[in-house]
Image (cartoon, rainbow, N blue to C red; front, side, top):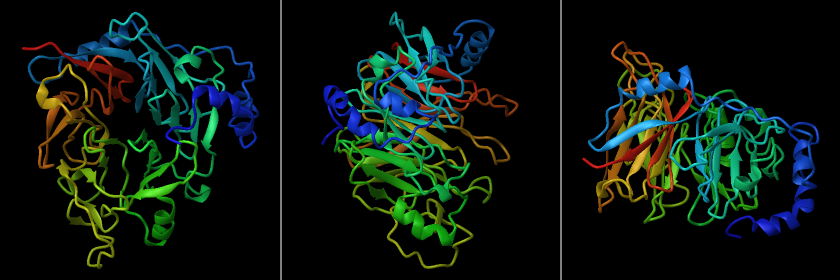
Length: 418
């Protein structure tokens, strides 16, 4: 099935789906799967005005972009990470690395959010970093070790109780004994084949030899895909350290993804990566390579037992390239059509910090990709972070959103011409 089912069919099959549920908070997921009230009545609302918002706006005056582009505060969203824009244009769902998913609504369509509140407050989320939408309005949320499905989320989100189901039950995304506090931010996207693609970062700086067999089997340190009813899981991508951003080329359908590379090798190596995958099962080098062609110390001198696909673009070392999206809108100049906008979260282990900016990667007719800064200024003259971009999403009007988990904000970038 291209998608799990239509909204009407989802309701009809709810009883069958519910029978396999494992509740997050006792009975709540099971109740929501059966369209029963949990008794949850209160939302947590986030104030959108005042001194805090004014301080963020002040910092945005520092941001440099190409001529004609503007940036403004779209919403105050605590711990904002990856974003999913509803296909109806009603709401943006925002994941976090904590226990909240936020719904962000611009009710008067002035391109500034009017309301930010928590989504499905009766559920206990665990690192719900990765929301994504199918074209027909099904919301998926990839957690640390579970994937949840919310049919018609754009229309249920106004109530504390929402229709919710397991796509992958808790403890079945990766083996429970492989759970870690490190590299747990999953992301998901629906591919042109109608399947859901989910990245699974491996937890170590360099994957351990004794874990390689398990990693290969489960797709840890890779990207898996499955049907949107949870069946036919398979490993699509191998040899990733920790990818926290992927998207599909709007013309070719090929999978492109960012990857965070090995730490502790010096200020300037190894490079970060944007990768292009042209066939299922390709291997991108980890743990034999730390980034680009730089070999890891742990596997240095060993024969590489796989055929490695090298990155399409080498990014500056340790800038922490995270979320990315292909630009398909009509607002920006033609040079940005089908380009990749990506977020660099910024370095944590470098003598001088780098990153904390939005990059744009253009791809020519021969497939050659070239990256350059697009929006920067979130590192001040003292080397202090004023923000740390995480993800990029596109609104229906062709503007883009940038999430920032340090400032707890989402910015909107639009084009007004020269």
